[in-house]
Image (spheres, rainbow, N blue to C red):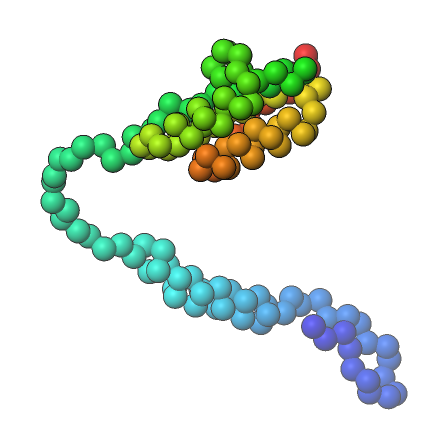
Length: 142
């Protein structure tokens, strides 16, 4: 946009009141070219006539192992009390199943981290590497 010239001897020039549409046209043409190039890429699809076959479901999900640890550090396997020494044997037997189950570990807030680490180490030694920590969702405030 032009706001006036630098000529000497003229009265102070007034700002140009006309709108210069050249930059607007330039931007619109650039956008038009971009949309012309990208529109076919977004709508591109290969049409295939796929054959119909029936097969068995591939993904079998194993029942998870539920281990709980109370505040005193006592272990529970599906609500049944268990000792740490027995836990390793049970985890080894569970690791031999196909498909390999995952472990759902529930621990009280007051449980010592050492006890949780012992359970995780026993699971790792047994060959179970999928462990999920079960928590409670936060309370909804009214």
